[in-house]
Length: 266
Image 1 (cartoon, rainbow, N blue to C red):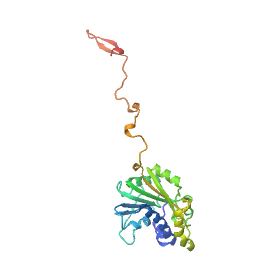
Image 2 (image 1 turned 135 degrees about the vertical axis):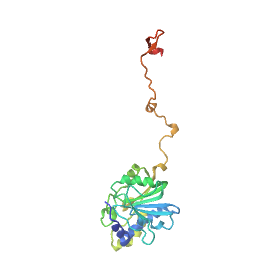
Image 3 (image 1 turned 90 degrees about the vertical axis):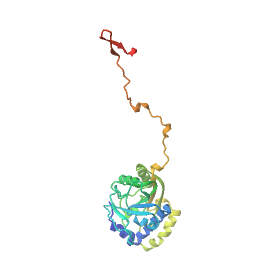
């Protein structure tokens, strides 16, 4: 179930709670990625609020928005960087993205493994992906007042198994949104303090969203034997020429007749 792009836009850009949530998650993304000069960045779902800090430094920034959600011009004050696409057919070349972030994409996807396969295809061998999903044990997944209350929430173990099945290695994980999903003035004023306290001392299960950092599995050290150490069974290679022989065969005689010859004399 995808939310409409106008609903997401109004939450993140026209409500105080949405702006506070945007900052809470975006600070974690900036913290994980650091310097992105010369890199290609992409975001899928409604990840454009997280990409704003990189517009002036990264070589290329692309906002991918799924068809059922809809697309909007982004950023509003500059040239458009967003594009409408199918969740399993992105208009990007293989190995072309250095940093990828997904928000409001995986939990609402009808085919999560197909989406992860597409992420695997476009991510460069040394690239990194951040997947932001509602935390199963957090308050934000239980409230319909925010976009994180829609779709399937995930636990850390569920995300690790899903990413491994799609060919990713989970390199790190963190959480964000330790303040409650409330528009009351007291909680909004306390949001920054609660985020800082949760980042430093709060247990992960109290965070409203789970952020998993993943890399393609082919960048990890292979766990199997080296090629030189492998000794496959020859029976699996097949037999190119049959080794079976008849018990006897016909041999010509001086008179032109044939006589049987035992197999031991062949």
